Image 1 (cartoon, rainbow, N blue to C red):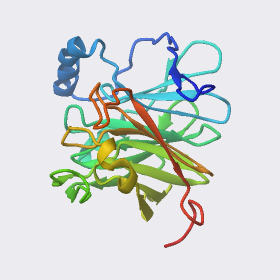
Image 2: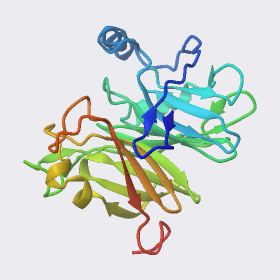
Image 3: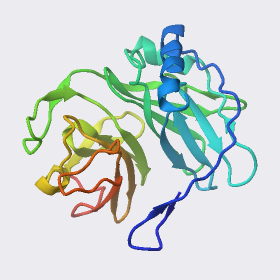
Length: 265
């Protein structure tokens, strides 16, 4: 949790009691690599995305387990009961095949009855499940999009090269799905039911100014929140130093584009 009362925000730890993780249907090979990596990471949950509904419930996605934890405003946390069909359909579509390239972001409808998930890369994808009587399940098909291939990094990126298409996070605003397309430094607006791209905006000109660059050969943006006034983008610098000497994680604030997020090209 961030205390935003001062110009420099302060991070505050929020302790959550996490119950045993349910079996999501990931194969043994991926689960065994997760177990091995947990010793280096200090745990095996690897939370990658967070969102909330209008009732104040928080939803956190565990990449390593392909599972979603619900944290209510009061009371204990619990894992969503998600149909194993989700992982089965995702893998059949070329998603969730590689270690450390599973679910990277999520978004929830204000009513808390629809959940979008982003598969990170190789291939990247968007999936939608809906809350049924006792389980979260696909309504028709789970997979809205599965997409491979590479795209060029922006020209401002030092040594720009083609990188795998990826999703780093999701945000739902005004009925539209916004994707953080990290390797090309763009935010894209998509139809929430089909995942079709409607418009994209680049933030490369600001993020890749010389004093804001990092030495890593890949983009570091990990978090996205879109609201009426603009977008928040969080950078996970992996404790690396920026060109200007800054070593703290950064949250960048961008104004909404001219005409708002619903503007047409």
